[in-house]
Amino acid sequence: MALSGSSSDPALPTAARAYLAEIGRRGGKRSRRTLDPASARRMVKVREARKAYAKFYAQCFWSFDPDLKIGMDDIAWLVEQLRKNGGRSAWEVAARLCR
Image (cartoon, rainbow, N blue to C red; front, side, top):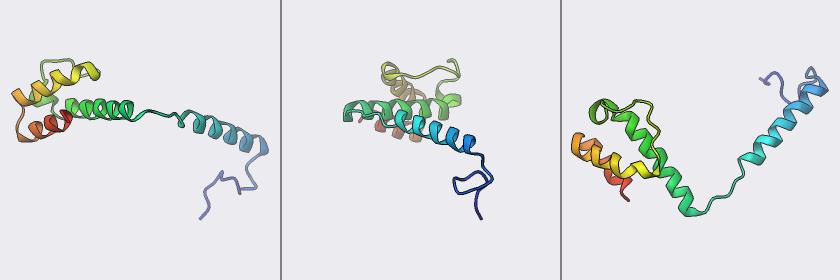
């Protein structure tokens, strides 16, 4: 079953096809950034810290803003709170963040 609007669809107007091709090219250019390995590791660590903040919010971070944006500078504090107020799974997440 072919998807409606695919490039092989003759019912798709030429202008629409050209527009979709242009935004596809633009998106591809943005997603091709290059990161050095250290920056990539920092980005992953911040992403994991944000997930941990959301997952353990009720247990460890209930007195803090639920919409707090965790950054690289907040990871040490987050690990401390996970270890102080969390259970075993929080400890395991904290250990992964310390690597």
